[in-house]
Structure formats: C-alpha cells, structure tokens
Image 1 (spheres, rainbow, N blue to C red):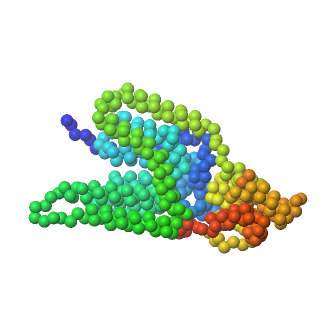
Image 2 (cartoon, rainbow, N blue to C red; image 1 turned 90 degrees about the vertical axis):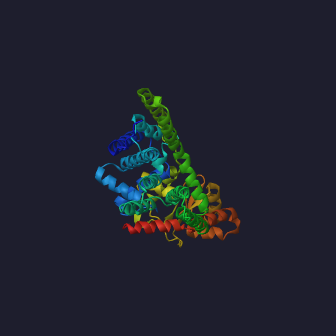
Image 3 (cartoon, rainbow, N blue to C red; image 1 turned 180 degrees about the horizontal axis):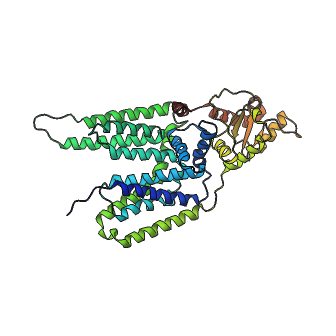
Length: 438
C-alpha cells in the first residue's frame, strides 16, 4: 500500500476562495437579514468610516478587518460584509476538514465543505455571527499549528491566542478552553503510556490540565458574581455556546461523516459520487433560497422608522440623549442613517429620553390624564409601537411619585434598573477599542 501524500496548500487555498466566491454571489441574491446581529457589522463599518469610532461595544478585530477589506476591495458596505463573512465561513469549514484529514485530499473532499456550507438551517449563522466565526477560525489554526517544536512556534501560539481574544470574548473563553483541555488530556495519556524502569515521571500535562481547569472554574465564578456578560451571565454564555453548537454542529457533522465514508468506502471516490454530491449541494441551495427569497419583518425596523419620523422634527443640535436598545440603534443607523452614540454615562438628567418596554397606549392615556390634558400630548413622549414608548426622565420621576400609576411605575423602575447596569464586558470592549485608537 503506497503512502499517502501530504495535503497541498495551493489546492486548499483555491478551494477556500472558490467556495467563498460562490457563497458571496449566492447570499447577495437573497434578501438581507433584518436581524440586528446581521446589521451590526454594517452599522459599525458605516460608523467607523463616517464618525471615526465604533457604533457598538464590540471586540475590535473583526470590524477592523472589515474596514481594511472594504478599502482594498472598493466594494459597498453590504457586499464587503457578505464577502468577508463568506471567506471566513469557507475557511472555517475547510480547516475543520483539514483537522480530520491532513493527507492529500481527493476530489470529493473538496466538495464536502460546499455541501456543509449550504445547509439551510445553518446557512445564515456566519452572516449574523461574524465575530464568532473569525474566532473559531483562529481556534482551529491553534489546533493545526500547535507543536512547540521550533522557535517560530513560540511566536505562532501567542499570536493566534491574542487574535482569538480580540475577535470574540465569549467564543474565546469556550473555544480556547476546549483547545487547552483537549491537548492537555491527549498529552497526559501519551505520557502515561511511556513507562520508565528507573523512576516514575511526573505527568506534567495532567498537572497543567488540573491547573487550567481550576482557573476555568474560578473564571466562571467571577463571570457569575460580577455579571460580566450581563445579568445572568452564565445563562448568556450557555445560550451563546448552545446556539453556536446547534448551527455549526450540523455542518461539522456532515464533514465528519463525509470524511469517514470517503476513507472507508472506495465507491464514494468515483465521478458518480461527485455528481451526486453536486446535486445535493444544488438541492440545499434551492431550499435555502426558497426560505430566504422574501424579506422577513423585524419589529425593530418599524420602531426605528417611527423614531426616525419623530427625530426629523427636532434640529440635530437639540436632540437630547436617547437611551434605547442596541437593536433599535442599529436599525436607525443602517436603515435611516441616524447616528445615536452609545451612552456610557448613566447618570440621568431631566431631558434624557429613555426607552420603556411594555408601556402601551392605554398606559400613555392614563399618564396624560394625570399630567396633561386630553387635547394635547405630553412633551417628549414618543410612542414607537403598541407596547413600547420613549419617555423623558422628568416624566418618569413624576410617574414614580404618583400612587395612582402603580403599574406604569413598575414598568419604568424595571426599565431604569436594566438601563442603569452596564456589564463589565462592555467597559472592557470599549477599552479594547481604545487600544486601537478608537
């Protein structure tokens, strides 16, 4: 049996670029997602170019890459984001398959990432979680490059670790921990199998694993105690990890099963199997297009439009501070080209306009009867939808002092409590942005 050749770099790179190109053209034919997570990179890109600062508190590396890519590619904001997301998603799928098979790929190995990329359930995930995808690419590069045998490895490992850290804190925390634990356990097992006649060697990898696992548990306690990612931080971390596993698990499972079948079944390396794989890719593309051919309704777009109409009546230099959800700020920036900066100082003033969730029209009528007249609306009150309203802080103080408005007062207290708390992650992200001069 002849020995298999090592994987060639040039065909791999061409395959990554080829799939990224197909993904870009295909996604560009679909209606762009209205989800705030998909619009956030475009909002940050627009803000970095027009205002010279980030629009939201995020890890800086993915968006700096996006700005750089737009400048050298001369593409529009939307197409720059789509093409960069496609490239990193293609790289992620190819690198995962490289992790499974480092020997020379056959023809059908190059078709497996395409089949995994167009799965309808997972197709949109990389376009709404660009930071997570970029971080996972660097984690896979850590798996593939970790040797510690040459001097250059001492530079590659910390460089990739820093790039992971600057891409996504949540994904770094889970992905890097998995990398450390996996390699520690593997090295520990290998060392345990090496017997020594004269003395018993200390299992250093096992000790390292125990030490890192202890640090990991202490970090979880720190995250929970200080609500690092927000209120119920562990739940946020769990939901983020579960979402990534749900959407990326299917493509990775397809790559894993495909790798095993191509290794064990010779019939699957034929031209007939290649044709069937291409047909399967086409079927996946058809159902993905069928599910995304019509734009989806987003309530944030409607609320953003209502707020935009209200702000048009106010001169720009007279617009007060407005505290609204990130999703609504993003919708205003992308759809209405209105830049509302992130408010880090939460010491309220009477003129501040604050988003109150759950305050509907009936509540507004009761408030108007208590503090206004039936013929006129209260100044500063902006009704965005059937359930959400923006109120000035001076009116909120009056509502909380009125015993007849107990229900409305509970809603304002709840909203103020949520807006008053700024997670430590946000301040840390802003500090990271300042390191890059933003």
